[in-house]
Image 1 (cartoon, rainbow, N blue to C red):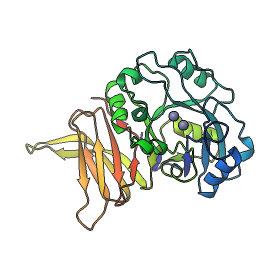
Image 2: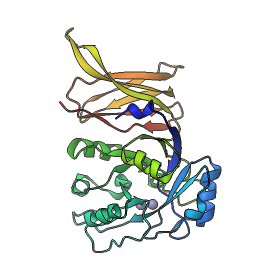
Image 3: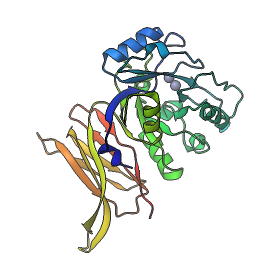
Image 4: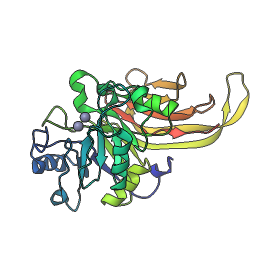
Length: 304
Ligand SMILES: [Zn+2]
Ligand SMILES: [Zn+2]
C-alpha cells in the first residue's frame, strides 16, 4: 500500500479535472493544455461537461494529454445531481434519466476511471454517496469550489472510508478560469514511465498523493514494539511519514481516532509516526505547511 514511495519509478504531476470553451471554461482546449504544460505539469485531463474532445494533439514527449468528461446523472436519493469525472474515455456517456451506477458502469466499460467530485459543494452526504459503486476516488480538494468556501471534502472522504470502504482522495483544480482556479491542487503520481497506461495503472492502484505544495517524501508502515499507556509493550503497525517542512502533521482514522503533531514555534516538522493500536480501519495523513497549504496521503487500511 505504501511501498510505491520507495519503489522504482518517477513522480509525475497532474490535474484530473479541467474545462475549456467546449463547455463552460474560459480557455480554448489548446490554451488550457499549454498553460498546464508551461506550469510544469506532466499530465492533464480535460473534462468538459457532457462533452468528450480528442486531445491527442496536445501530448508531447514529456506530457500526456488525457481525454475525459464531467457527467451529471440525476440523483435518485434526494440530493442534487452528481458530478462525476471520467478519466480516459473516448465517447460521450449519456447520463440524463440514467441511474448513477449505470453511468459509472459505462465509463468503466470504456476503460475509464471515475472520480466522485466535490461532494461538499454538491451538498452530498452518505445518503447520496453510499449507494454509488465502481468509482475509485473522491475529490478531497477542488479549487474552483473555493468560490463558496467549499473546497475541502475531507469529512465526506472519511465518512466513505468509515462506512463504505477504501477509496482514494484527489486534489484537483476543476479549472474554469485562468488564475483563481488553476495550479492550486494536484496529484503526484508514482509511475514507471510517463505514458497513459502507466499513469492509469498508478492511479487505479492509489500510487499517488494529493497536494497544494507540501511534499510527502515517504510513507511506510513498520511493525514495532509500542508502549501502551499502562506501560505494557505490544507489537503493532506504526505509520511513519517523512515530508517537506510542515507546520502540522495529522494522522486520521475513523471517528475519534487519530493524532495531530504541531511544529514548535519557529520550527518545522519533517517526520512523525502513529501507532495503530485503537482499532483503526484506516489511517491517512494530512500535512499542512507554514502557508496553510496541504497535502493528503491515500489511506492505509488495516484489518483487525
Ligand atoms: Zn462539477
Ligand atoms: Zn468541473
